[in-house]
Amino acid sequence: MTASKQETTTEEREQIKQETGQILNGFSRKRPGLIPILQKVQGKLGYLPREAMTAIAEYLDIPAIDVYGVVTFYNQFRLNPPGRHSIKVCLGTVCHMKGGYITLDAWKRRLGISPRETTDDREFDLDTVACVGCCTMAPVTVVDDKPEGVVEPTRVDGILLAFGYERETKDKEKSESD
Image (tube, rainbow, N blue to C red; front, side, top):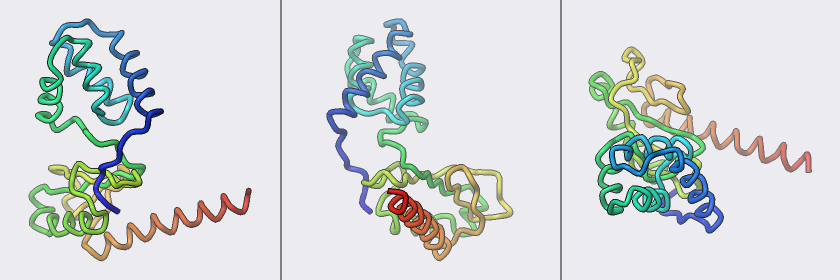
């Protein structure tokens, strides 16, 4: 798996423009609405693609670089599409002390991406969080909103193996039903 460099398809670009346009119609054309617009668009699309940021800039009559600057300044905004499975590594104090960065490095190596990126197949996205409040289970990784405790490199392999097994089972069931 490699870092998310995938391009959007023509169909995806059209859908992005349509959905962004629908959202923009609910807002005034004043610059103070930028962050609420970005939040709403990301809520709908899961991230903020270039096409959406450009449409927002045109709607508000501001330079596209200003929109991009806001998106990259605030940690709440994503520039990559979310994966089907979300991996968040806790780097809070206790997780840090118990090997959170080692766990993060294992995820980065196994998935071939860095934090805030998505695999090319859009199966996984990787991010870090400051604390998930499960300090007794450190180091913690949140997989699809479910905290996994004592996640060391071998456990990373086990979690990914389980995803692979699940995918193979679904593929087998699908082929048998066809």
